[in-house]
Image (cartoon, rainbow, N blue to C red; front, top):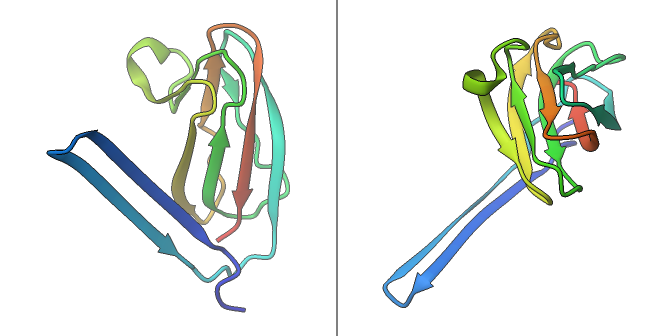
Length: 124
């Protein structure tokens, strides 16, 4: 079935009358898989591997940090200080188009202190 997934994103900046930026987009990719998951992940000050148990592929990964603790994401569990690719502060969100036939086992998260983050993932 077509268009089971809907992605909407927008970014707006207005610093002054002369500096205004607005970008937005919508995508409705076709999902050939049938599954998705949503879960809170317990984060510690050490690298925690994200688990996608039950998914046979991974199309998109949505992450939201609902807490005041800053969290970082990396593909390297030992070199977080230099190898992280995203930092989320409170209420920050990110959407990663993973598009992998097999869910990766190399995405890690860690926090400045113990906390939880919300993740949602869907199959291709």
